[in-house]
Length: 248
Image 1 (cartoon, one colour):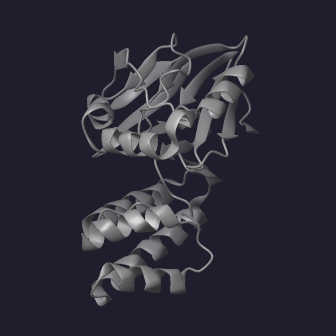
Image 2 (image 1 turned 180 degrees about the vertical axis):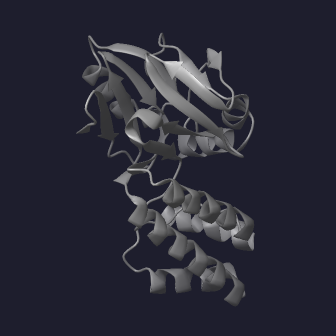
């Protein structure tokens, strides 16, 4: 757990160490906590629940990680309608099923029951102001009081799930917007908090990824070339998924 103090608001960043390298965040103000995502593995759920014992949790924003329903079951859960659909019927459901098969009982495949459907724009939970930015799959979260934004994936030295050239362009535009707006930190589900220089590194990677894909005739050649150019990158499973999107 890393704790960042923003003069009245604290950000608790929990690095689970689980097989998916999940990161879960807690925003604390005036003795109340709001969660950004939840852990999905049984051991991580137990550890974070113990950390929050005797603390007041006002709610949890459940965006891209809909599994892990045994985490704080009595606490209000917030999500957009499209995030609910993603977890219950769409790509999120498919991922939950895959992870359940791969990890068995270590993975909590139960899907959170959302108690509050939220819309784009401002929402206040536990006295903390958030701005909801819907995405194709779910939603990103801006925290104006600490000049921080949360999105699903960044990771300046690891591969990401890139669902083709158009998706890469969308991520590039999003990251350019983050740089333009000058956020102090970028939070993601699978990495420790990062800065704007990391966003630029990811932009450069995505541009290069598109170029490699355009120059390769099949998925194996693509993977080999990406590995060659980024030998130290982690997230090999994400590269496999990206290859499937680009080359079917």
